[in-house]
Image (cartoon, rainbow, N blue to C red):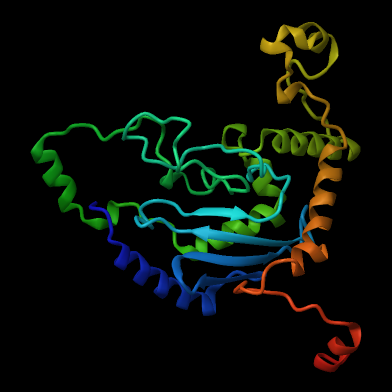
Length: 285
């Protein structure tokens, strides 16, 4: 499929934004920036799950090739989440794996605070080194005759926003996220430890991987000096209690006055600080 023009992408985003009037997931509010139509700003109010009560500001940066290529979703506050990169870290590349060799200068890497979409939308991320096989002309003709029905439809913005919501309010999403799809390995291990302890407290037998307990663990990782550079792998750290504390701090920070009211006056979506008397006049109980 040939690349889409910027004008086409902008027009599509206008149509997509209009459709959100009736289809936007609950708890999410988005708006395009007036001078940058390919950049949306948004706020997520988490209503349940591990991050309940968090108020999360985010941005969605759409590439010119959207929806053929994925947008980049970044959060403006530091979050301890398996699918969100720490604010001090770069991770996965979103570039086309079929072109050139990736390097540290790859500007398409997921930025600090970025949400990994690999697990939710694998169609946007072909395997590294994946290229289309060379086929005979007659095979190409047969495939073209099958029409666009066989062509995988790229995800719609509603699906993206729905995924953005459930990664924060659904334990099932975190449970099913494989480690190789995690953007924060520390948060991934902390969540797995938390879930194992929760299951154990309910009397559920939890199978511990080799190297995480018992005599095998003592022999397999008796000293951090056995690892290159003397560093332990994330799976060998003690994650007990880490999840609860880090998530609690993230939720509290997201509701702080500095985060809610500390931005400039140019925010498209802004919060108004009001006292209890003013609130009662607007919405009497």
